[in-house]
Every structure is written in C-alpha cells, then in structure tokens.
Image (cartoon, rainbow, N blue to C red; front, side):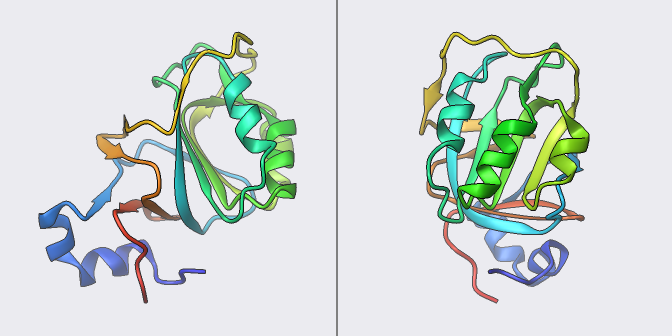
Amino acid sequence: MFMAATAEVCDANPQLFVSGELRALQPVFQIYGRRQVFSGPIVTLKVFEDNVLVREFLEEKGNGRVLVVDGGGSMRCAILGGNPVQQAQNNGWAGIVVNGCIRDVEEINGCDIGVRALASHPMKANKKGIGEKHVPITIAGTRICDEEWLYADTDGILVSKTELSV
C-alpha cells in the first residue's frame, strides 16, 4: 500500500501537476469510515439519486480498488448506506468516494474502509438502476477516468494517471 502523505506527494511532484498526470480534488469531502488513508485503482460510476448500480459494484470483489461515484452532487438523498459499505469492506474494496450523500454514518464509521462523501442525509435513494459504469466523470473540479489511481488521506485526495511509487 502507498504510504506517502498526499502533501508530500504534491511537494515532490510539481511537474506532474503541470503535465496533468497528477490532480488534486477540491476539498469538499467529509471523512467517514475507520480507514483515513487509502489508495487504489479507480472504478467510476455516474448516477443521480439512485443507488442500485452502487450496490451492484460493491457486491463484486474489490481487489483493493476504489469506487468513485459521481452522484451529481445531489444533497436531496443518500446514495450510499451502511449495508453496502459493510459489503464493500468484506469484499476487499479500499475505499469509496461519493460526490453526493451517505446515510447510516455510525455504521459506516464502524467499517474498516475509507469513505469520502459531501454530507450525510437521512433519505434513501431511488431504486431504478439508472446510471453509467466505467465512464469519465468530473467531481470536485477534477476529471477522473477508470483505471487511474486515487490516493486519499486526511489532507486530501489525489488522482494520478499511473500508480505512484514512494
């Protein structure tokens, strides 16, 4: 697992920011889950107020990947709850980043997985199964593609086109 702090990565690699190989997400996410530091290859998902595809992904083996969900920034309902996060932990996902809301915060905070989301909300999401998998998304001012790498700690979130080495 990658152990360098995101701030150290930024300080040591200004040329990667200039080239666009490395990007920092705007600091809009709250930290949830017990794992405050996580990294892994990215899987992208685009949904809006619907969590069916989120749950489907987290039922798969994670193999250390990070699910990055563009929920359109909706603050009207939660697209991720405690049961899917528990399942993600059990299936080996490294983390989940949600451009939207979560619910069941106490349950999520008990899981050994990294979760970032805009906020918590008590309302459930729709269950229509509408969305797009493995597509480029833009969240927190940053374009993110499948198979890029995400690095998160308490200072922030970085996305790299390739896996970084210490």
